[in-house]
Length: 458
Image (cartoon, rainbow, N blue to C red; front, side):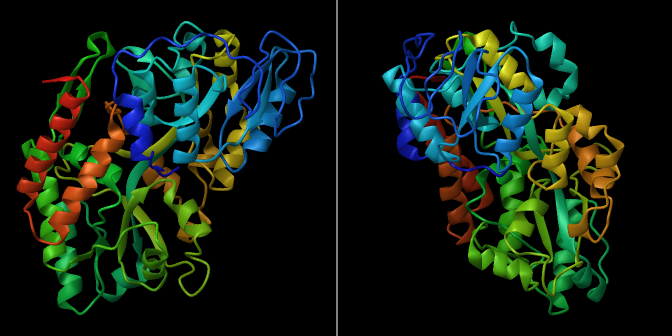
């Protein structure tokens, strides 16, 4: 799933005080789907019907399009606990409600679907439970190290990974054929191909947008950047390193391509951008494994552009030492308001982990699964993806990228960082700063903010 951004107001409320009181371990009955009766009986305001009414019930918020099927499958298969599911909104809609419940000390669900880069924002408020002691050893081999890293804060684990977004390069076969271009294997080749296409009168080779800060961060990490170091054992200390040479190099690279007119600068996830993709305005789309599903849903690949898209591995800075990176991904986390965290953890581990739910998710392009039962499934690996004209995209590109991904460390104020990145990339795009200046200004901005929140910046 692509990253939906938490509102600034909610983020400021989330991290303005470091020493937030530990929330009580129970939440009383009430509306909004946040009620829990995990010791037995039912729960009110469920979207789903609970079939085994004699079992304890765990409440859950989530927004996957096929969540009804996933919850029904879990309840059908499980003999210990049942799930009461509510969709309170996606992204910021859900996060704002969760933040309100955190502040009130009541009203949160037992289990919440949350994007991985948001986990530290809520963990620092003691709003999530470390689930290592609640059955982690039984499922740890179901996911790769990169997936577990993304849901961890220090040595603690605050979520069960479900879907991810290994990066790759989607491209238009018709444009590559017309301008005699081979999919570039390095970023140097990418720039050369972009120049070749422009010199021949072709369209923009790609797009460098200000509104996809998580993508920009991932591309910097691929070059060797490590934006944040954070360990909750030293909760008031954080490492902020946003203007290292790798970060400057990546911003400088894309800024140069934009200034030379080799790539566009249209905000992504907009009607204008999608129209450009459909009409061949861009030869490539650097995006994640969830992109085919997103593009299909947005109307790409259904008309005259049907069968024109293919995918290749993400270009590398050093092909002798390839680095795979990720954009997006969600997990199921247990909240500190869960009355029975052990039962809640059983739900978090078990949701979207059965074969039927996983298969439904990837066959309908709802998720790119991180569970190895899917990643290692020959049906998934060898799938001929219709969006790519029958190309075995998982086998050739996405599964190897997912298996090679090693994870990152996110910060407790990731939304502020993303917003600050957007501001600097916008300035880079309009030519008012260089890549190096943008990185230096970003470092200054985020460091100042971190200190205002009470952090000692290393």
